[in-house]
Image (cartoon, rainbow, N blue to C red; front, side, top):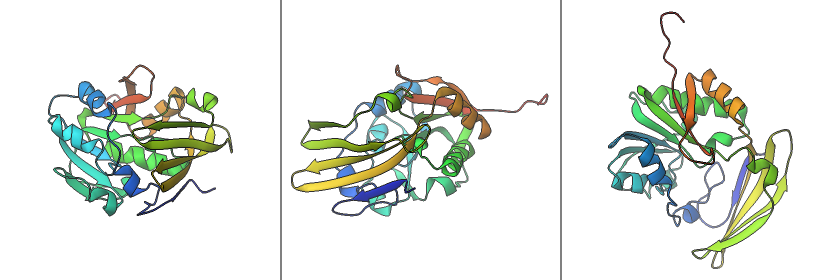
Length: 230
């Protein structure tokens, strides 16, 4: 089963994302949400930063950001932050951060081994008194999602070809149209309900510590620090 596939003009990343399309996008409240949930001036490791849609506003909010992406074409768009070109799963920096940020639903990959590796990377790089912030779709989304189309800011977004290839799995294709340019991104996503996510975090040495938004889409986790009794 192919988990990611992308088409369209310009560079396409290994996970199917179109660099030219992502370079057009702007933040939609996510940086402010993260900022409100972390200390002032927190040092943030942003995993899967893309073209800097979230990086640049976080910098403007006073944070030091290290932006990580496996696509050099994506990272070329980032200004003002340290960039590291690396797959998330193999990243190993010799330092830790106040906040490790993994958003854009990356954690919902249908590849179980890859998800475990993502979480190990988060744990490896978060300070003992820091936190990890993950973005997932609320579990109920998987039951209610239907084909849809909307147009905003000159971008037409269509979700189509929705299938459920297995328990807790959903495959779909997003089609993006801007003028005469069309990109597609096909993906397979896994539902992460609270219990499953909590056990996955625990396996990686992290503890689920609540949510930073009202619909349970943004999850906060903290390092599990072993005591002498353990």
